[in-house]
Length: 260
Image (cartoon, rainbow, N blue to C red; front, side, top):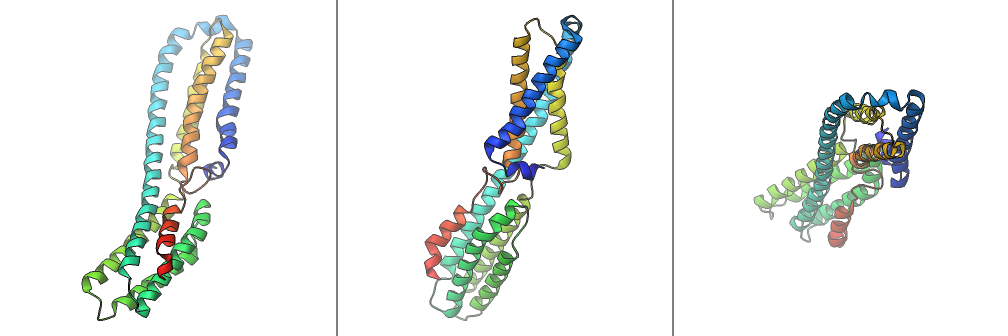
């Protein structure tokens, strides 16, 4: 469900996650007020107010924890893409030369970056990976092995070539892993149920001014559901309108691609 919601336009997501639940909470509040009455509800104000303070704090801590975790993992995904691009740029420089093996490695690097941008990103948006990109990476390793067989290459350069290749592979695996979603199902259940209970707790209160009470409930509901909106929007770092693009890889290909 979070993958589906993450792929929607932001305005649609906002309607589904913020506007609709807020309207439902308002309607339920008005219905309860009319059915139970002001006099019976006001008797709960003192005790319910104390308990609501505890409930609100507990849910606020849970929501803040989820936002911090998701934002941190989102940054990890962005750093993985930047690390992959940096390793690719270094490989272009290490594979400089007119030898057929060096030119072959640069050509393989061009192919990998192009396929990663064109095929890995659409696949990651659906929580999958592209076998074509994996094949291009295998070919790149094969080209590197052919390159380091040359006697004219320094051993230190050979070590750096495979070090950067390993860094590219690790960075790709990291972004593929993070593309499947960050928040586990059990945390989603706690966030959704906790948000509903926190907003629903306001139904035990009553003030003489119904409009003021409705407004306060709306504000609370918007704050709670906006937190869920933010989490869903960045839960899948490579999906939807709020996503990490392949710009760093494309920039490296544009800067060094002519070297193939």
